[in-house]
Structures are given as structure tokens and as C-alpha cells.
Length: 172
Image 1 (cartoon, rainbow, N blue to C red):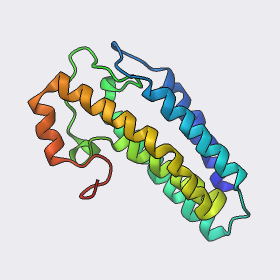
Image 2 (image 1 turned 60 degrees about the horizontal axis):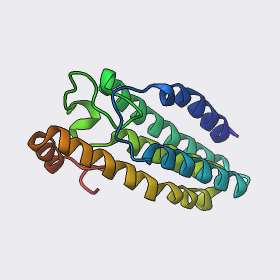
Image 3 (image 1 turned 45 degrees about the vertical axis):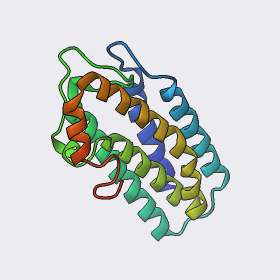
């Protein structure tokens, strides 16, 4: 129940961010694809729901909160540069501080942790596996963003990419 309540709170907090847009977008349908896959994964998790042990629910809730914290931190560090669109803002600069010092896409790492924690806390390992539904659409979204940023920022983004991980420090 705790994980379900936290999941609902996270969704309510995240919804206003989806309305925030800026710049001319180069999204290529990636946002709608990610959103659809998230709702599909959430539906699968709720269908697979089982009675969680207290330990599993606490672990799932902790992972969900860690993901939410990372995602919120990443968005705050981006500040005026944040947009749900794949777009450059006016006077856009490459952000390399905070979580961006290690990761190119910490908000997506946070999203993955949110889904993993929700799945684990609600439906055990089956719920965690349901989160894999989101992986292909997230990979597509990241590829769209990276092509866009490489084209827009050139060598500077290539150098940044060479020294940072996409999603998981020192691994991916």
C-alpha cells in the first residue's frame, strides 16, 4: 500500500512537468512513445499485483523515492533548460554539474528507478520485469536526444559524451 501511495504521489507531482514546453521540438514521437510504454508497464504491474511483504514494500518504496529524488534533482539542475520537448532553449548551455557530471540522462535513470521500485513494491520480481516494457521507448528517446544535442552542440557534446555514462555510472 505504501508503494502504491508513493507511486500515485509521484505521478501527481510529475504531471505539471509534462505541460512545460519550450523551444521548437525535435521529438520524433519519442515522448508519446515513452508515456504510452510507462502506462502499459504500470497497468502490467497492477495486474500482476501481489500481497507484498513489509520488507519488499519498504525496499520498493526506497528505490522509488531514490529515483524520484534523482529525477527531481536532475530537472532542478537543468533549470530553465528543462523541457519535455527535445529542444534547445534560448541561450541554451550544456549542463555538466550535479548528476550531469556523471550521467548524460540522470532524469531517465531516476524514471527507471521509480518504475523499478514501484514494480518491486507492488508485484515483486514480476513487477520489476514489467518495467522492461519501457526500455525500448526510453532507448529511442535517448537516441533522439543525443542525435539532436550532437547536431546542435557539436564537438562540445561529443567530448561530454565521451566522459560520461548514459544512464548508469561506469556501466551504461
